[in-house]
Each structure stands twice: as C-alpha cells, then as structure tokens.
Image (cartoon, rainbow, N blue to C red):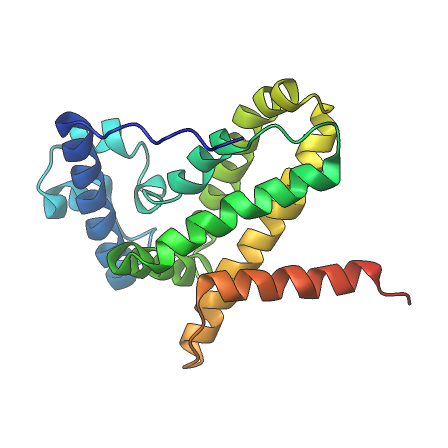
Length: 207
C-alpha cells in the first residue's frame, strides 16, 4: 500500500509554522542563556516578536515552545499502512516510518540544529524532560485507538510496538546529542539502525 501524499501546505499554515519556529528559536536562546526556570513567557514572546496571546496559541507553555519539530514524528504515525494482525510487522512499519522522518531531519540542516539543541537541553533541564515525556504519551494516546482499529490489532499490542519504537527513537536522539558533545558525528539514520541492533541483542541475550 502506498503512503498517502502529504497535503500541500497553504500560505496561512506556512506562516503559522514560520512563527512557531521563530518562537522555538527565541525559547532555545533564552533557555540556553538563563535556563527554563529563569525564563518567562513574556520574554520569549518579546524576543520572537509576537504577542503573549500568539505565543499561547501556537506554543501553549514555555516548555512546549521548543518542541515545534516533534510533531513530525507524531504526524508520521498516520502514514502507518495496514500490516495485518502481526505485532512484529507493526513494529517494522513503525521503524520504517521513524527512519524516514530521521532521514528527512538529517537532510534539513536548520531543523537538525534545532533538534540537537533541544536534546542537549533536555539532558540538563528536568522541566523539558517532563514535557518531552508528556508529549510522547499524549501522541501515543492519540494514535493507538486509530491504528489498532485500522490494522486489526489489540490496543495493548499497538502500545507495546509504539513503546519499543519510541524507546529506540529516544535512545537514538539522546546518543546523537551525547556524541555531538563528545566531538563525534553520526547520521541519525545510521545511529537509529545501530540502536535497534544493540537493543535487539540486549533483549535476546541470556544472563
């Protein structure tokens, strides 16, 4: 089954996204300068050149302001094709969806830099870690019933597959940031494959 074509982005949607990216950039700058606790919504809005009302409409909270690019992975779940009543096939499909998004992220220098800065901040800012976990859980809750109904699997099977794929994604992004700080470079796609292989060995190894 072919993946549905992405809808064409309209002018209003494009401007909305551009503004969200500006808010994200302002939040990242301030968080790196002053920390999350020491930064206010008004400061982020002022640096982004938007009103507090626009900030709350597009970002919600100051912690959520830096996750403008996270939606690409959640939205990609809508592209998971029918795989039959096989949890292993679903996991393979999820891995393919996430790998495709990582490849697109690797090819987008600006988005890649934003993502890297966010992952590095998460390692030192508990408030951002909490926001990242909450957003991941919310995304799973949003898509689990729809995917389960579409492909004919129990919701628990879908949650389990998403849990594994999500762990691989988190580990990939965290290791990416760690290696960057250590002066090492790696493409997200290659690192994602490496993480999958290492986690697979860890699960199948005997004590």
